[in-house]
Image (cartoon, rainbow, N blue to C red; front, top):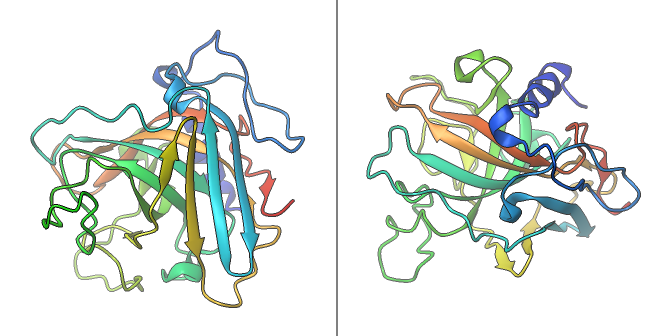
Length: 251
């Protein structure tokens, strides 16, 4: 079920001036869902369509953009605090408990991200150089749990923080950050105009009809590197136009 508070926060983010291009052509999720108004100024984040197709317990997440997918990544700052994250995101109506977080923890989303100033996939060596801690600048996947926090800006969202001393339920591949984030190692395939990720869910997970949307966004690590640690600061584009999660898996 969609949380009205979280959806209101998502909708508020879509009107951020830095994230919009007034004269851009419209886009949206294909399959008969009408496009929302406004698209990203940067073609690599200008969504043409977002899709999720499932067969059994495996789902394929796909997003197509009007430019070269993955071409734009944040500039390195040399420090974690204040650094940027660029992302391709599929928010879902699927409960966070499905992938190992506490049930009802927030809005679950699959994110493909790049961030040159830190590495949050300690179990994986994406660039194959023998060092698992130096490849955050390569596109990789996460599960994240999002929630509203006005400390990130009025109506803004964050990746939900884990307070000191709290012991929430976490996936086995949690990367050790004080956030509701997982680094499961689902490798994105990026080429031409598309980003695609194949994800295996626990056997028995009902995926048909799960609601979703497609979002391209920028996030920023808090300048003091404290909670809220990771805020959504810019929404570049939204497939539906209003973040109503109108897409349906296999429909």
